[in-house]
Length: 497
Image 1 (cartoon, rainbow, N blue to C red):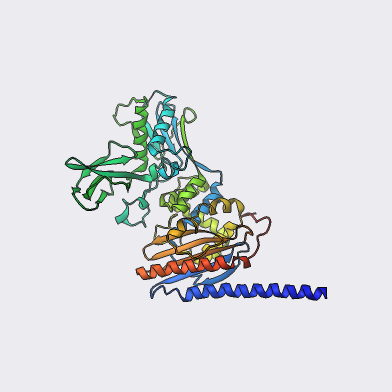
Image 2: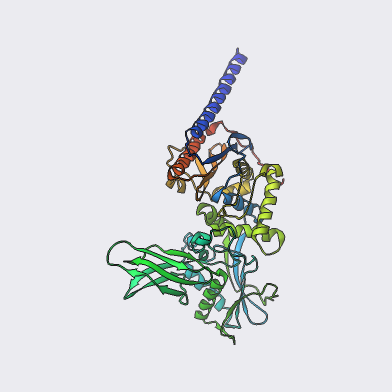
């Protein structure tokens, strides 16, 4: 009788599991059937049990699609693997043997980045960091012949050829260089002043060329913008303005490394350091093959840990930070200046080693952020990547925590119902593309789904809203049925191990 009862109980458990699995599949199919994305749209969907890698649901999962900012999930996880969780970017000021100073960059996209500085205790402004950096150096030296800007950790192709040429002055198209500053944008605060319009700047840079072409109005809202040409750091204020702008207008810099050098040089002089140069120009870029002999250890250092960069890359979807990570991959593996080409090659190599060559068929990697419209990946590949990252604890713990959550940033975009478990996911948005990939996890048991929902061809506002509804419905179905996924093993296998 005892065995009969055990057998009956086991049968009931198994029957419940089958019914629950059937319910999950039914809910997912119902979400896809009801999505109504429009005639030109396609959704690639793949859902895996993250603890086993098993593909448990698919729809157009092998169709290569544009991932938009879901591309950052590849770049940022690869950075943790190749650079290491303890990696930190540095920007240093070092004396040379011939009396110069050299500003040495490792590609830190967060040097004087105001969003990162706000998280410090105490919080700092970008100007505070620049002043502190210069004052620290001024305690060690009194004069220098010149300031050399050594940005050669990366190449000097600052703008990716795929990026939209008519949007290069926007913050999301900020150039990428071996020395970056203030997220490579200049923040303007336009204000009517007397008979014209002026603009406060962050960081402070009194030499910036600003031309006033705006109109002061007596009533109505501000409609003011800042224009920059593609070839210099000259700016024009345009539009109409009534009151001082409360939010900054951010415009990309033309040559970030030179701009950073001038900011540092100006603050060094303010701190008492003199430049003894006959040319009258105390700063220049290092020559490509120039040998610079350092006379001592750095006299000023600013360091940014990798997790701060990942937070900006994934949570804030900063393209600059993703592209700096990609070029850093190329630098770390090849020993040469980081480029888009060698960064892409390293990322692709890692994907082959991690997933297998056959499993990345159709993958096209053009940049690290997804701003290029030429990137392509399948939902199957991206979900497999996410599942693999989940089984590597060093990567998972650092990578997952930098993703937006259903109770945080994602709630602003998606009209979720009740969500009982944790959702960590990255959105991806460019014209006609809305993507969402990440994890749904039961924090108590470790049961986790890795999902990728890539929606392309969304040509109307109605189709975009339908894509959001589809993505939310899939998240809710996974949340409701997460208990039917596999419990994790005690010791996940390391990549390459």
